[in-house]
Length: 218
Ligand SMILES: C[S@@+](CC[C@H](N)C(=O)[O-])C[C@H]1O[C@@H](n2cnc3c(N)ncnc32)[C@H](O)[C@@H]1O
Image (cartoon, rainbow, N blue to C red; front, side, top):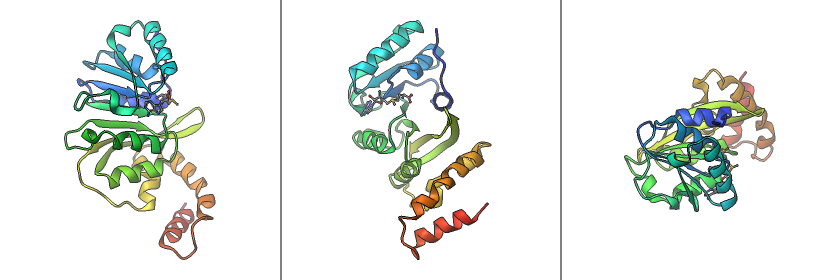
């Protein structure tokens, strides 16, 4: 039986480039790997994880979905399981923002024009991942807010252009989520966390003024 994906992984799957190989890094339970494999839209589907336990779960999921022969499972750290140019899309879902950028940094072949699309669903610190991407020459081609299990997530797709951008705090906080109907809910969630963050920002600084401005807006 094909597993059901939550809203996060459903949105991530929709951003994978069709017709090209795809890797689901940190695949854990293997649900996304199985759905991608069963779809028949990709010439190669790779599921990978740092630990053998999750990979064993992924193997079971693929067997239950009867698509174990349509996906390869690989054990290893981040993108070390891939060769340069092997896939058109890399999915990194459910790991922290910092783990996401550390994984990207260790594979310089990703940060090249014509490199793979990155589809990311950071478990934490969306704002910091957006900043990292812009400061390191990636363009955000999608930034979709989704709610799953009562929490807000941002499902991002990025491609390397080499053009760096020094974003404002506000840009990092909301990204492109305002383009979606769910953007208002996401913005309210981000704003609700701001007063606490503001306590650690010295009064009179440009950052304090920017945050106060966001908090004044409806
Ligand atoms: C919370 S699970 C996310 C599973 C799935 N991607 C999702 O979003 O539902 C995170 C998985 O990432 C794996 N992981 C963490 N760091 C990793 C790394 N550096 N390389 C590969 N996998 C990693 C963990 O072992 C774990 O199975």
